[in-house]
Length: 66
Image 1 (cartoon, rainbow, N blue to C red):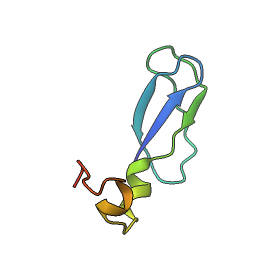
Image 2 (image 1 turned 90 degrees about the vertical axis):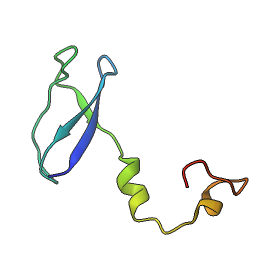
Image 3 (image 1 turned 180 degrees about the horizontal axis):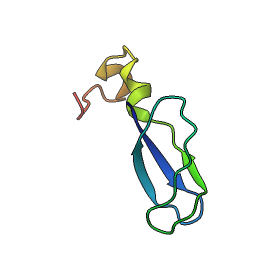
C-alpha cells in the first residue's frame, strides 16, 4: 500500500497515511482533530518516473542530489 501525505486545511499540520490507492477513507488531523484534510501531490512519485539527468534539472550542472 502506498503512503499518502495530507495537510489539514484548518491548522496546516502535515501527516502521512498508509492507504490503498484510490481509497476514499476520511482522515482526521492528529493535531487539531479536524476532518478537513487535503491530499498533497507527492514529489517522490512524480520524480520517480522522470528520466532526466542531474544536469537537466540543476542550472549549474552540479547537482547536490546526484
